[in-house]
Image (cartoon, one colour):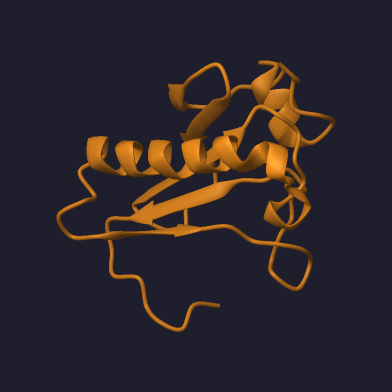
Length: 117
């Protein structure tokens, strides 16, 4: 298994910098965002270094599905399912991506307005 590349998320995967981990498997890691945009704000990342959904390949199909299923399970454990929550991924600079390692934001605990951004 890859160890996350050279981004801050790679360092978190390798335990070089601390994070409040809420879930971990062999292939994904979920932790609380240090600058939360909602009362519950968790990031879930693949341990494989994929820069964004746009750079994922057919080979990553199972991993992408796992990310979404794990995100839903984490949201349930956080008590977000009844009132609802949002799962977001940013792609590229105009999409608001600041860390170029694929990550999903799980946001809940408050109303999520539309349109976002």
